[in-house]
Length: 415
Image (cartoon, rainbow, N blue to C red; front, side):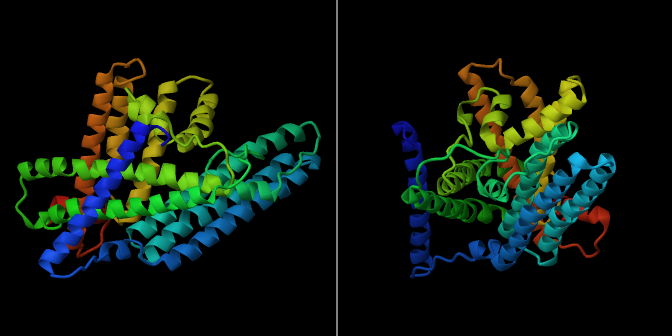
């Protein structure tokens, strides 16, 4: 954002948000004769925030105390225990059961039982995955040290709870006992990032209300045709691209930088210049550095070690499968239906493009192709998920069966 020509792109998006607001105000004045500015959709999608708050608090308290206390208990007894394997098996079983109940079953129960709307469900599911990744990183980094020292009969110092608490909030998924710190907090910078994040929320809202809902709301009531489907794909390309770029800026720039500043966390490498990618392999590495590092160190490298550095392709596909499953899980839980569009795009086309468009492709033409496929992919996702959302409303299931729940309603919705 310090580069002038890059700030110009930022200003263009701010101008686009202003146009959305002005057009909404103008339509209200012309149609209603007064300023309405209804935010019904925004209020609905972020509804039941009280439930989100108390469920998040329980997830946080569990993640802070249970894995840490179990590790501390095991770490203090392991060096002098005569039954190291039995001790590890008992503590590991308790940890596995508690992690399954608290970080797997509980968030799903909250979302389904309390019927949380999409954005509230999105918050719960993302925090569920974040806490799982954080606790896994803490245990993955500390347990090998205890095992190594314990085999020599040495006691390992247990990390301070304050270090683990700081890690749960700082914008990284790789646990360290200390991180580079900035000398002070720039509160104006924090306020600016939160304000920009809020602006992004309204930008996405206006994009959906203006460009998407009028098109897809009544689509299932019209006769189906291939022409209509193809046109709707390309109609969704522009708003899909807006949602992609604004979500990236809101989460990976504004949100993470705000928390990094408040915690004086100095490492701000949350993403790299993914927009210059000439290959999908580079795009995957640079789009979200925070998650990529976790997948690389704890999934890719560990699987490669288990495979004795063989079957690299199988390991790479396993990483893709895990990432795609996590993304699709969040969407399924948030939207309330199973429609694996992102999963198929990720595991089929994403893998193919990753192999075909590798790091040897350096021509600017390949950058154009990366952007082209991103535009088309976002259009397909937004179109199909929007169709299914309204199909679920217009054609509710009369009888809940397994195949009825996993089969997209947009495929069988009667006209």
